[in-house]
Length: 125
Image (tube, rainbow, N blue to C red):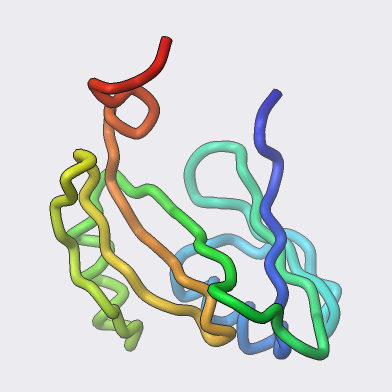
């Protein structure tokens, strides 16, 4: 089994589309104003956004995107106007992460996990 896509809700899919294009995702389905789908720049996963009239309540969704050159990516995105709530930082679980929010307040974590992404020292066999 492989993960095909993750779909998130948005109250303004057009604005969300521009935000995720700025992050570097490639638009492959444009059914604005109700739906869009992207390819991730690396790997086989896709990411989509669908129109809702009201966002879910509670903590919402957290989206993780991995990049081998996290610090350079963050610098590039900051130059494009993307604001981060946490700049790249090494975590105790052996990942390096930067945090931000999209326009619908979904949390995005850009990270580099390397070999520890799927194979941390404490992995269960």
